[in-house]
Length: 474
Image (cartoon, rainbow, N blue to C red):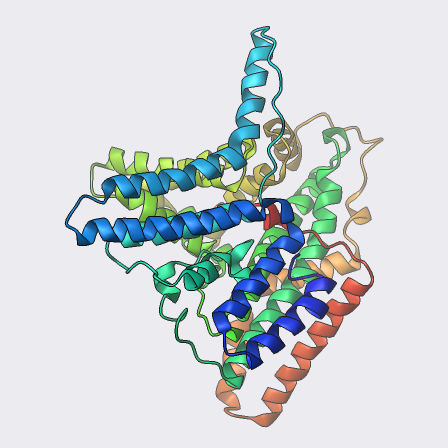
């Protein structure tokens, strides 16, 4: 089940909100609803999620008890993190590893029997990272272990952030798990965030998805340079509004439930460097890798070479986290190389450039990276990138002109997407609010606009429009 579905919007969510509002057992209601939410989409892997929660509840108490007794908690901590990483490695990377082994065996003329495929559990990357952050913070004595099993259960399985984040640290919501306030003002804010995220997902991301899927499905001999650039732009906007919209919906649902989730995106496409881009893109993941991988490796406390190795290692792992495919690994290496280059001196040269050129550099690097991220293989990504620059085996007799893809609805979505991907709309809203403070007419216009967006989203869903979700299987 995803947020942008009829079953969630008209069945699951209304029933949940009513029960959550009227019943006093908030954590229990949220936990049971989250169980239903997860089971709806992935019943076969529910036991794995439950085992993860029970095990980490025990691990947290074990680590804390060892610390209280003055004993070394390192063994408990290593076993706990190893348990989580082992589960993640098996379920997410076993098939990838076996495919690699079989390809190597075939090249060496060895006969290897293919083991049975392992299914990827829904949201495993997110709930495992939540569990690890909980254990690390206990080990570092930044937070106390949660003694209420229901509270920890609720934290890990909480449906707003279970499938696609943002990655919420336990210390951020520890107090809210036991004491949170509900108010109509907070609920209104949460609903506003949710509708804005829903509109980004359905009205923008889905429009870009249709264009991106069509263009990335073309062979290189059919791909005009202009069409390839349109495909890259479509996917660049799709992944931002798809994932950013989902994160905004999750934050809105969290607010309605009395939680404060961290912001996950901050206009990443206005960045002036790749370093700045990663301070703005998927910020909860960037902070997770910074605090739990980069800093423990030594961060920037050593030599420039050591810092570069640490930074590069983090982004190789970041690429692997996104998916079990060589395209994701190379995507992480690609970003890591640019980050290392900027750390070693490229950033100084970039800073001396004209501001539009800095932005052009960043967007070119990012868009080429998204081509790699979107492609099925490194070879197809390379062919697509070559087509973008007019290099390749284009057959003009088979090529489809740009006009066949750049229809009015896509053009309108691109214009809206570019505007909404910048602070322009926030600045305009702030100016209006400053000009008409506490104006009933402004409030009414905002409410009518939100209602209009929601109606448009429902019309799109009711019509059976294309409705994929990129991060659903991560």
